[in-house]
Image (cartoon, rainbow over all chains, first blue to last red; front, side):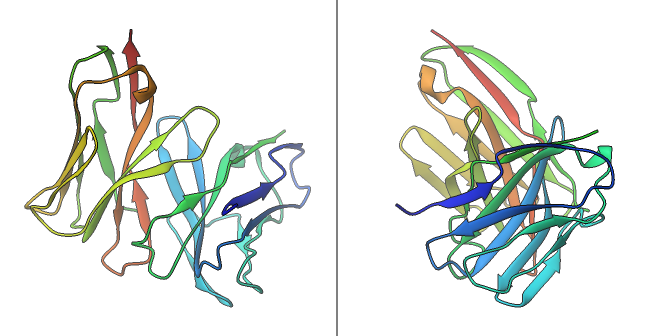
Amino acid sequence: EAQVTQNPRYLITVTGKKLTVTCSQNMNHEYMSWYRQDPGLGLRQIYYSMNVEVTDKGDVPEGYKVSRKEKRNFPLILESPSPNQTSLYFCASSDGSPQETQYFGPGTRLLVL
Amino acid sequence: GQQLNQSPQSMFIQEGEDVSMNCTSSSIFNTWLWYKQDPGEGPVLLIALYKAGELTSNGRLTAQFGITRKDSFLNISASIPSDVGIYFCAGLSNTGNQFYFGTGTSLTVIP
């Protein structure tokens, strides 16, 4: 089944404790992206990747890192999480150009205390 | 970043009624997209628009790419209970790589 998977689905952590949210897609998609969703603000793009080893900042990259060492994986790293990074995070992927249909993962709900 | 203003913020309608929502931007986009998000899930693409003035349908859904390229509209005809959810517009930047989403329209359909 074609899908985007994220782990963990739920995470509670404390300020400053490094964490990684994994994202994997099995559709051989080139474009991958991370978003955060906050009430009243919609989805905001954090980082995106056009292909392996190619990543670029989105609208709200501060406090986040990503890597794209393999085509299928695009982990989101929070080196020193802060409470303002409490949010719902979505990973997405699309084939070729980002104009193609983006498939979203199920989301990761993060709470930073 | 670029701002996409979506309205209305929420709608409560009777089953069978038509729905209209719109999205405006301070910048020009070359691609407009409409997504629906069900509770607890990620957004799902409903309609993609690639040309100013374009009118595209997907079943009971119809969306239009505004001529100014700074706005887009989504209409749902004869609403049904499964239309409930949050609808987002999104614009793809002129570089073709970065997405900007609207703030969402929450739709409730009363049977």
